[in-house]
Image (tube, rainbow, N blue to C red):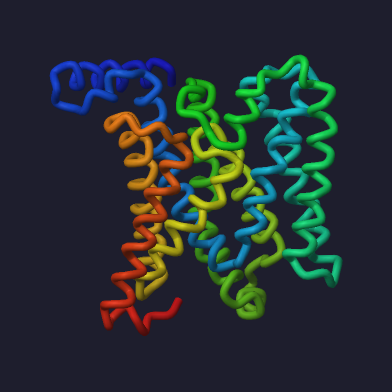
Length: 301
């Protein structure tokens, strides 16, 4: 895959040198981030629609913050502190599955239970970071929390590509079943859909995508990019296919513009923050459209 990245980068840099493309395309890290954006936009748009339908917003936030504990565990186990993916994926998937398993076996409200798990994860992570603070650069944790365009390398891109392929290969054939299980679990069960299995699988999807996107968006903001494009799309959609399609387009647009705009206009803001700000502006625009257009005002999904 690295040769493919090099081929794309060389062509884009040549177009930028010829002034066909904007000046930021001359930089390798910008092209790397844009390639990632073209992957995470469709991913987050599609998953975000389902997260909104299933009302799992707080869940994605808890998984993102649990990644900090995964980083600390990875450093303790000897992983590279710049890309401790095995520990982050391993801990976050275990965290998410344990949380989902507990949800099915307690009468506590979901937000209460997620808050309990999140607090425990942060406490464990903060404690472990004390032991690894001498071996880890503070900028690594900043990259996990807020994302860093400068830190995206071929390893991050390959991880994101693998996660995208896995989610597409497993998720697309099961998407209708997941949607039915989200909207009407009883009907889905009556039609032979394995509702509980699909719930666990969806939790794994959200976890994998959240961890894979941390380098671009950051743990603090990945929940925002899962929800805001879907919420914006809901404002101007009258059917579920419209909702998913427009959420994908808005998420991809937000990623691309959020990466390029600070570089092009020399705006000193983090990439993750810029992406979410663009998505928020689109949400504000769609809210105005819904309020002023009669055909959207009464739409309900």
